[in-house]
Length: 87
Image (cartoon, rainbow, N blue to C red; front, side, top):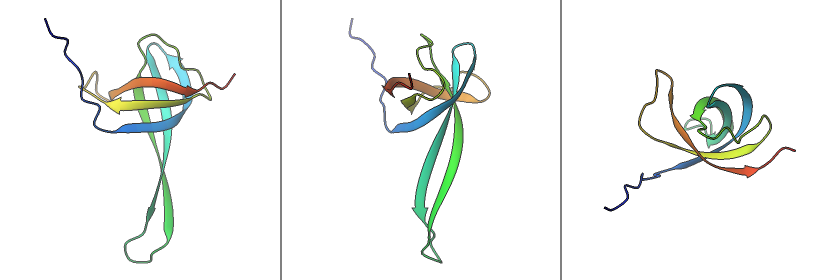
């Protein structure tokens, strides 16, 4: 049988701020954009709950993650890889 592959439409990058839950990490991402009216560079932060099956990511690590099927009320992102380890 052919393996099913998940289409990783967009990879997000962020820093792990919490790993206290089981198989879940909280990742903070920073997004910069230009304000449409005032043409000022703005930045926004957003936290995502990311599914980490093997529990490899720790606080301070930089990780890549992608959107997938919904796992719970607030968790719909999955860990792709750890880009840079904090330790």
